[in-house]
Length: 212
Ligand SMILES: N[C@@H](CCC(=O)N[C@@H](CS)C(=O)NCC(=O)O)C(=O)O
Image (cartoon, rainbow, N blue to C red; front, side, top):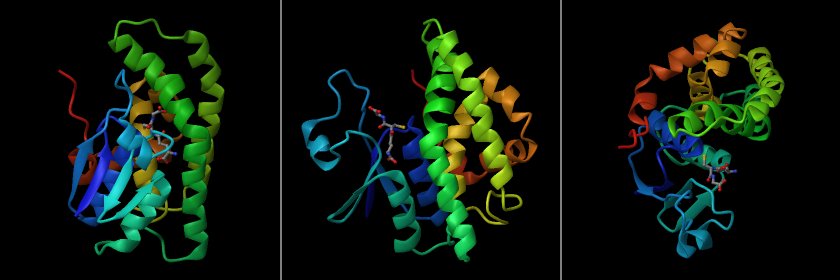
């Protein structure tokens, strides 16, 4: 049995869940709230010394870092392959995943989505300077992803891959911000891919439960 520790609001947890759903692997999501005032428990910190989510448990095998989890889920279980067959496409997949972690996550999610959408929802003022400074880097991320598109209709071909699972949670949050929606109009392939991926059963099954 697979246990995924994390929270449904987390983009990285959703990436891992998307891979599990796409593979048809059943799992339990055990709540870990890293933003709780007291932080994650010391038992969790022992398992994940960086205190982030997700963490995957498969029997006595424990794994953290989402790209490693995604690859393990694809390789350890049956179901449709989520890694392309050729070295070039697998390299492209790793490249896209690295771009997402290094350049997209902080810019699209924290600098733009959290500032514009989450802070507004919480009645706090958005940091307009932070948003404005993130627009150039966000444009660069979107343009790079648009250029690296190798597939149709998915990022790497006619079937979904780990790159799609990794990218969709970040980009779907980014799109909720007005700046994200606008910038995505400049990358039509990426926008069409996002719209398609959001309609998949895996994406719908992993939607965060709205807070009360
Ligand atoms: N490198 C980690 C990043 C995971 C990550 O940043 N998760 C976020 C939630 S989406 C988190 O745990 N944030 C808590 C924090 O930064 O304190 C991975 O690939 O799993």
